[in-house]
Image (cartoon, rainbow, N blue to C red; front, side):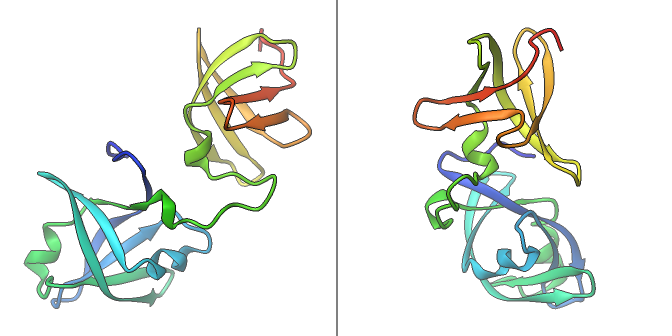
Length: 170
């Protein structure tokens, strides 16, 4: 993933071209996937940094999504955005339900055991199909299941801490 701009959340990526009129194949990180198309303005990261673009149209295409940006009317212009991350302002996301968290809000939090042992900082998360996993960097890398009330006992974004029931030797 490319460097994230402050205050922005990466929600997808331009992964291919579709046709000759500027349409692009888009991979969405949102759930459900087509939520990505509901944001009218995207930030795309190009060679010279982040650029604001307006989504002219978008739709499901087979198993994926395609999108058309304003001013991108041919395959050559669309190709310039190939591989670009798609971001939006964090403020555009709705507040999560109580007990739910956006990954972006967990990244950078300190992780400690319920006994107060510091394990490090959340680098990023990934999903396994069963549960999400915190990747914690400290004196070594740890993979900790993000299972609320089982492993994860408390999340306090204001304090900047996730408290876990975890053996620090593991």
